[in-house]
Length: 242
Image 1 (cartoon, rainbow, N blue to C red):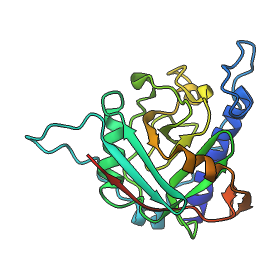
Image 2: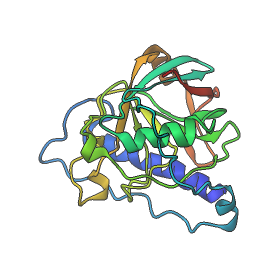
Image 3: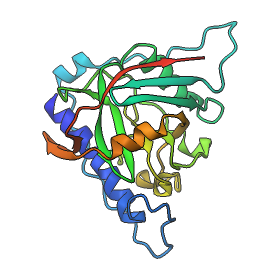
């Protein structure tokens, strides 16, 4: 479990390194045509142990109920220890990603009690995968990366799925809020894992001030996490409004 926990943290560190290298962390500028490509990811995932397998939920997303009209732009509310964040999801552009987020995690209560475990001022805030004790929570089957099909940009105020930089289709429960226009994280090339992009699937419609406040918190290194807030920021609940 500890190996999986640290591997996930390192994967997010790789995202930070790639984007900072390309754009200067939160500058919002497009990479120059002469800018060298991103660095290689930080290694493959460790072999799944019996203990890891026991905590994983492996069934796929629950299909929509028949006879009910799907909500194209559902709204979810994050109740956190720092305040409320309201997010409008985009099931028109990223239907699989939204279904995974809502059906597999929000409606199952699997985000309740997790924390924002990585805060990079001027770049992103990451959460949804760890408890306050830094233990990984159960995940479901990784989903197909819709970054190319959705065509949504990682601009300030959007929410996107995190993944292993070496595997485009490895996102499960880990998500991040963009604090700046992070165009380096957008889809560019389907043949290169590091340039496949990170799928945006919604945007903040209320509570951006809460995220900006979280971004000001001091951070520390602990147990493989390099930007853990010194004051725990807990997600008490995530629920759908409509």
